[in-house]
Image 1 (cartoon, rainbow over the protein chains, first blue to last red):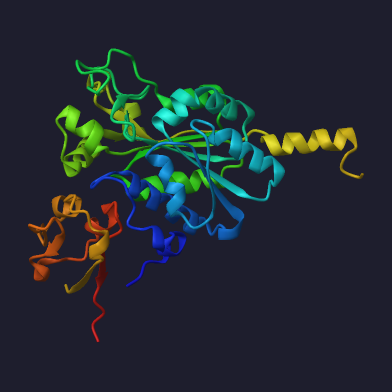
Image 2 (image 1 turned 60 degrees about the horizontal axis):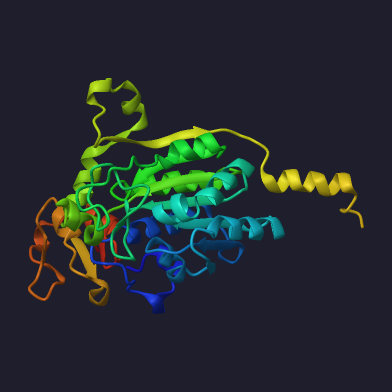
Length: 274
Length: 66
């Protein structure tokens, strides 16, 4: 039986070009299922993406989509949201796109609390360009630019977003599909900057370098090392090893969003009546 | 329990995720690198394969008894 989420895909573009076993496809499905769950109008939803493997997703999704400059998805999305606050704007970005090239745009998007839902596909590597280490490659993990293991400490994008002022911060993985769908749906509900980190597997560029070339094994790694937030909070410190990470909703606070604040300025300046 | 497995062959890339997560060993990747149903009778329609298929190639429905 044909699934209802297929209506949100550009059928003539499928199958997608991601490698066999790539987690991006799973996250893309979670996004469209979250959109379906929230009943967003297809004509009033805009998908904005940057550059990278993850950002190819906008080309497969049947909405008004925008494939923008590297790292600049959030500024483009901010413009769309301010020009027409009625639209639901969802930003798709990757770990390198969001935290390296677009690092500044990301923190300032959070600070302004623009009403966007940002989904970061974290595959821990620059996949498209050949497996260079990204700011989210875990320390000691190998990449083509770190053949002996990365010495840099990696970003925790969720803590970064929270500190920068995002009002909804969550993390999930490609293994926990329903959970990921719920987290994205929660982000769509939140009026303000919503950030969802979706950890997914890259068997080709990251897996092969780190003895996890089998995509199913990588997903089992996600299953075994992701700990739900409630359980993570009770976990003794010695059990919080380098491999383990928490998933779930980390932060949700209500603050004035950017479009509302801007409307107030328009009122004060008297532009609304003219 | 009877189920109906639909596979969209042009979409399948043979990554083996569905095979690894099937609890009843219903699926296998054939020599052409595509998934195939080898043990349809064992399928319990849990939908684990469909849930995690990155290429939207496999769908499982519970067969409605007529």
